[in-house]
Length: 357
Ligand SMILES: *Cc1c(COP(=O)(O)O)cnc(C)c1O
Image (tube, rainbow, N blue to C red; front, side, top):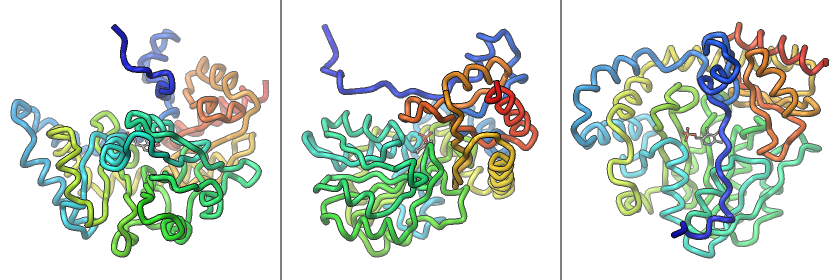
């Protein structure tokens, strides 16, 4: 027997894992600098690691109370009722839950091109059709309402990423609001803030006080360094808060993730160090990479290197793993995650050498 027709479904292409590359090169993982998946170069918050250890003996129980505790902590932080916080397995889980709550077969969604691959994937599971709006290299991938509205044609959902992966460009709050205002009342604007900690620009959270057609995605995978735990959440308007109970996979988030998330939320020092270092390394890459770069609001920088795949392969042989952007439709580019200061310097040296060849 066969699965259903999945010919329109494209497998997710992740950055390469450090163990995988180390094995292939016959190197120790510690000798590698992995800057391909926008992970936190300092690891998780030490407080989160302690919380995981402490919670380990209780993993035979379902995560009910801890789920509530983390939801309450986030609700408090964002000044919203708990029902407007939807915990989910990673930011990707947010996209699934929103798709389950909003999309019916035959609906159409609008996603950025280039853009995050999981928007179309999660929409297609619901048998929705996918259209794109362009972010143009000739305009430095600038994000404007006009750009989105130019491609809009009554879509059920529009996905906006700010800061945007993989380009780093940002969309001003006023532009996001204009998209929401100038589209149908039944069009949902999903604002993906996976990298919001790394920019000075504010969250779209204030829009939830005025509008019912916006949802915000946040994650613990990037600035908080908990990518392996799969923890994210949506902030949603009051009007449809109760949809969560109808669409979520029971016990959406595991108990270790809930405890680690709570600890990480309180560890301001870890986030500050992470964000400050990312700011410094972004600047370092603009100044020292011998390739054109784009200004980024995230913990990564996009660089134009000619043949992204060749540069990625050559850098990898020198122990530096970066992301070839072919799968984003930018085969001439690589995306380099902000590492530690030392890690980033080494990566820049290796990349310059490789690009030179
Ligand atoms: C990393 C990322 C996410 C969420 O990742 P999770 O690990 O599932 O939380 C969402 N959107 C974008 C654009 C990302 O880069």
